[in-house]
Length: 303
Ligand SMILES: [Zn+2]
Image (cartoon, rainbow, N blue to C red):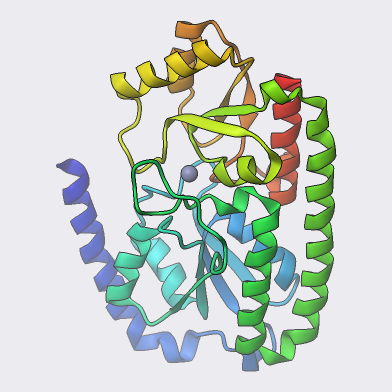
């Protein structure tokens, strides 16, 4: 109830801000003609880093959902909306990750919304027609994101084409190296131990590409979190499968997985990054850094 009321208050404020902005947007908008690249906003920090790798010094990249928070059920503020309204383009993951934001924006902003996951082969959610949105957790998919991104950047800012393409080629090489490194690292994990259990079952794409089964207390954050049925189901699986380790996400309260750990006697082996990069100053502050940290934690816990 409270959440719903808050949402309508935010929505009303967002409309007010957008009307204010509409009056001055033509003077203030950054255009490619400024020769400074584009003003880019994206939905969450993982995409923020990936886009930054491609734009380099050209243009400015901002993201909406703060590091440490998850992007599924985030409540955008009027300030967030101004960031989107001021941008030349708003890049989103798609696959229904940012449904909340798209609904707001379609009503109040002209900023074009571009989906970076187009072309990814989706993995369905459990008991749902929708696909899981966490495609970025496999670097193979991020290569598709980068190709979509470059195609759009070049069209939007043709003067930056050479920079965008050179950065993208270099970054795709890094993603391929990451992919090879992951493949090599996971050979340390016995095949029967290749099972990733986190609070939100977000590693489906990673699991499919690198040969892990995955499960979670819940399938996606937009569902109820931590119901007795969800606990009972996962406790049974952990016990039956003799799972060697459990993991927690940087963006989810650890008490959920602690309940599973207490009930099964299986330890939580470490923290992983799914819906946000790590804090500034950590090795996980970039997408590639966070994926390397994830794989190190998986290998340590499961080998
Ligand atoms: Zn998630």
